[in-house]
Image (tube, rainbow, N blue to C red):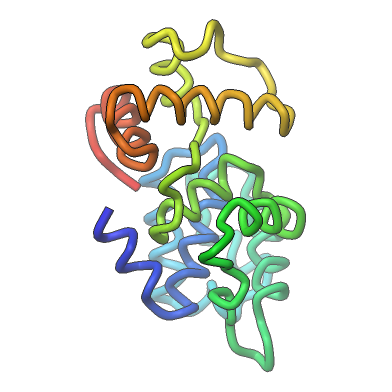
Length: 191
């Protein structure tokens, strides 16, 4: 949690890289996405490369054509005078509104990815990252009766609220509970 908070206080480039990591993670392994983003950062291609150049770094990331496009489009949204300015879009006083804004304005970002991004930069204390690992454990602990096949916004918020109540009942904050449930499923703690 301290690492996430530290990242949230770092520069816009690092925070943008974390957003790109979260853009890449759907249906892909987190470690593969992390390695790809690190290579993109180290090469400078993340901040200046076109879709084709970015795509070359997305080895093992599913749907690299789409995700490289999403990264380029996100870079346009958060660039001002050829500098990344992503921090100014994060309303620390209203994180749910920031999440909604991300979902509406950044291609490739749904509620799960927006929650993941905000948690990874230290602002996801009350947000659920409802991926398959979390959902399996929520079902296991009878928080939800079944794992939904698809998510509407309403369904996402309904399950998030159930997880929030469960979190309060057992005395583990949501962001920490997410890491705990994820590690129970995968055998490790990773962002």
